[in-house]
Image (cartoon, one colour):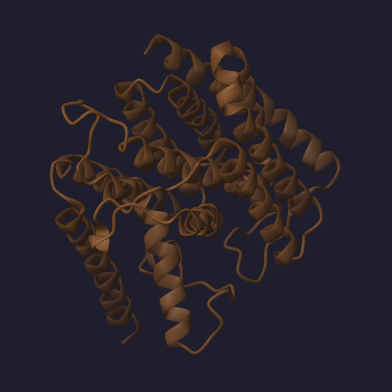
Length: 348
């Protein structure tokens, strides 16, 4: 626990000290996010907070990672570095969506090909256990890209993406500690520390945004952490205190809010006969703002809900996936339907 706490503290301090420097530099160079169109903010705001998040994370890992672990996680750092450069390039000069996607695919291929980060089994979901290798590779690539972009999509409100990142990273970091996976525990707490420092400057009223750099780094990292969480259960002993009988379902629960929001907006767009990839203001945080909640209350509410899904996943850890998954999805669907009902009542 001391090592993980030191990693979190180091990442926090580095990011906390770097963000004011980035804010000052961005204002001097006019590297500011301009309000308008889909954007909620009303003033010019620096959007390079992701640089501080990545720097804090990386330096913490460099300092606290055991040398024996480097051959194991070096490809993760390389892949994350590629995501970082894609994000910075997009924040400075917007990239075509196809180029951003190609960068994410390449980073994912590095992990899948060289680090063997894969979902090997559905662990009984839909009656499916071990996956054919070709499907395992494709499904893992799909999962990483979906989770990465789900955080990019939900990053539209002061404090929201950062708070969700801290909650999910801490939960996964604790599990990695219990499971004895020190390398991933250090990385998870390093991400939590860096995102926590960013929150101090991103809470309403925000002084800086994380930009695509931060959202992609956080989403990509959590995608890898969740896959590691799910796949590690294939080698855990039955009596291990870290073992979840419903690991695949619990992995979804760890990042339920961004996943549910992504699925929700895609369904709404399809029902409205629009492209599922077209940007709009149908995200859950937009809807809560229309109901009258402030930025900070919306972020806190969604953070509490994310923590509740994690606690529910832990509570159901001894249930099989065939039972845990429906019990986990039911409140997500119910909350979405309740939100739609409240919005209709407000409009009427």
